[in-house]
Structures are given as C-alpha cells and as structure tokens.
Image 1 (cartoon, helix red, strand yellow):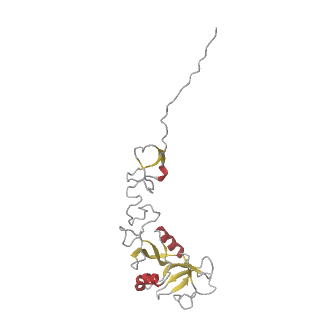
Image 2 (tube, helix red, strand yellow; image 1 turned 45 degrees about the horizontal axis):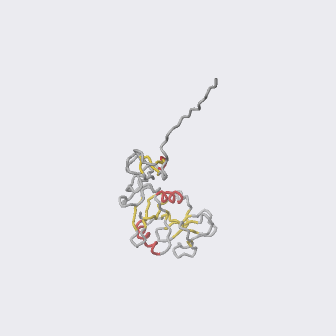
Length: 226
C-alpha cells in the first residue's frame, strides 16, 4: 500500500508597502508639530501624528517652531536660542536691555547688567543666539556708545588675545589692531599675559582686563533681530 504525503503550506497576506512612504511625528501636545525623536515611516498618517517635526517640547503647545518667543528662560520657538529678541519679547529680559539698531544694520544689541566673567558673558550671549559684540567701524561704535555713555561703566566686548598673545581678535574673526585709535593711553600693554580680554570703558576707550576679573562686569551682545 502506498501512502501519499501531502505538503501543506500556510500562506499569509500582508498589505503591500506603498512606493513612497512618508515620515510622521507623534504630536502629544496637539500644536501641529511633532517630536522629531518619534518619527515613523508609513503610507498613511496614523491618529495622533503630524507631518511636521521639530517640536523641542512636545509636552507644551506653547513651544514649537514659529511660536512667539517670550521672556521665560525657555526656547519657545525651537531655534536653539532662549529669551532672544522677538516681536513679543522687546522689553528687558533676564537682566538684559534689548535695543534694535536704528542705523540700518537690522541687528539687536543686548546691554546686560552682569556681573560676569568674559567667558560667562560670552556663553550667555550665545544662549540668545547672539555673541559678545564685535565693533568693526564708527557706525558700530556709535550705536553702542549711545547707550553706554550715560552708564559710565566698563562693559565686556567681544575682543581678546586668548588665541595668540598680543594679537587681539574680535569674535567675528576680524582683528582689533594694536594701533586702533580707540585704545586707551598705554593700551594694549606688552608682556601682560594675564590681561587677555577687552572692555569698553566709561571714557569711550578700549582697555585690557583679566578675563575672570573678580568683580565681574556687565557686557554687550549683538544678534539678529529675527
């Protein structure tokens, strides 16, 4: 007697993948922008997902790309800057007075009360998407001095010889020459390794100071207006 054996097979049907799947992002706070870490690829958008990512705080519907920046120590608009100037954040914020330049430059000057070391002041400017101010010409100088003149105080500005002793460089990469007419009498000093950072003093002149001066100083930042 011959025994016939039959081979049984199990088949499963799956929905064929679409030719062009899209990226979708979980939008927990329902503000129209999703958490970039939650991205999935799918043919159709699942419930609770959106097509726009970039939300840096998906637990708050007040925080997302394009949101109004306000003075609250948060990055409201997800641009990696905090408390920077915006149409809704124009007053003094976190100890810094904000002034839009009126000379056609389109930038914002931040006059910050401090006190801080030069490095700390630089870091605090960077949090706003700005930088310790670089002064390239008399137009820059006039815009800054108009605010600083009545204060009569030393302020950190964005020049130092930290990279190369005796060679003063602005943070925008341009040089501050030792023969610049804005240096105070006897400045900059030769062979002064502890005096690496530059201030604008109350007499409208540049001078060298230790970058970590004990008392700390106020400072001036400059950044884009938007």
